[in-house]
Image (cartoon, rainbow over all chains, first blue to last red; front, side, top):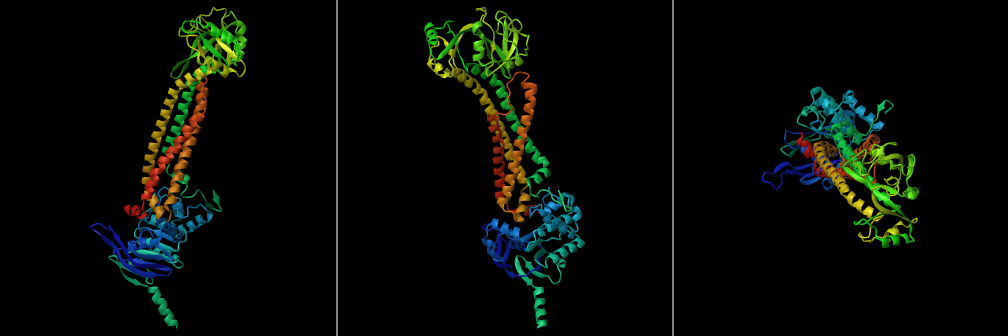
Length: 234
Length: 381
């Protein structure tokens, strides 16, 4: 599904203080499920997410999603791809302040059809905030706002959900509930979660470890278990 | 609307939802537009009320006849007189005394011609001026009776039985006093009474009445008549003078309208920039969610256009409503000619939303072209 080849991301290129956000990132990931991207603060894990979702373009290297090479697409083409295939959750609950919770969830579809409203209500129910559907964002807590952005990211049933520190603003129980929703969604699709808190990811979650802009390890736990399972079966 | 227990309203990114949820911002712009369109309509109504009496009193009078005043020495050249008498284009040449009365308008007064034809020509000239008696009766010779236009009657606050003249109002130019016995309507504003065998101390002149549809040809023949022979006041001359006089007021109206358009366009451009600048966060989010710049710009364009259309319709509605009320309570009772909406004003009014839409879209488009979703989002981190 995703392949990154020699990807570099450099800020302030041509200036005196050049920042290498990412160096020579190479990996291929072609599975559904939950994929964790972990690393300390400032390690470049969010940058990986931005590049993979087409929100940023790499300074050099190639990023492939399915048959698309993101670097060769225009910003509008990447936007259309995001709209069709991706859902994105930022660190903070970015919402349109003048719209209700329900309308915010429906924004990616910009629809008022009965079917989509029902789908949005089901998502809000799963996230435990269906009672807030008519509230405005300024009436919500940080955790509640984050859950609205999660519902918004899932409303168009995306193939890939990118979540950048989705539980940072949540208490332990809420974080657990959110991760449960992600795990459930990851049965059918790919959910990539950036976090510095490894404990929110299950033990069987595949993990990309980024350290100082360099991909340290890609632990494909599920694959090894699957392989092990196959070996056992054989 | 509720379908199967699910409430469906308008689309989240619809103009209506933005407008309703941002009333403070949107209503201010709409009100400014409404007020501007309204102002243009009011300017036009005032200009019309000032210009129209002059047109009806001067140009209106020469639509079917040509007025002939004596030259500065008080005479009309005999050769000219003979020429007109024998002209096959002329139907009749009527001796008449000319006097003036005044008509009040917003910025001063204008002169209205009072005609005193000989008694045997009174009905003929009444018909030729295409007047219609709408109240009272025709005047009788020797009784110092007069018929006046209904707009002038309202303007001077005169009713049947009232008197008009220097004796009742020293500001008047009509000597003595004349009893108003009839009110007329027609395509010109004038007053008619009898010459009473020359007892009227007015300017003694003539009215040339060309034959049916021969007015222009007749006027053309006497176009270059020397002022020493007589002062021939034709339709063309009247129109020329009217246009010259009206031009200054029309210019003023034009300048005021342009000022309104400029101010509102400038304000709209600034307000649009401020509004879209404060919404760059929203645009950043939309872009990150996969909306293209073109889609976002189209949405902004729709918002701006609909807001302008709303303001325009509101302004027209307010202008028509206020105009109707003003017309009934102020313009008409004072005899000020009134028209609810003229083509000229409509064109100027349309210019307002068009300009504000353009000046609103330019900063919105410029801002959108600069927005990078991540930069916006990261700035808010």
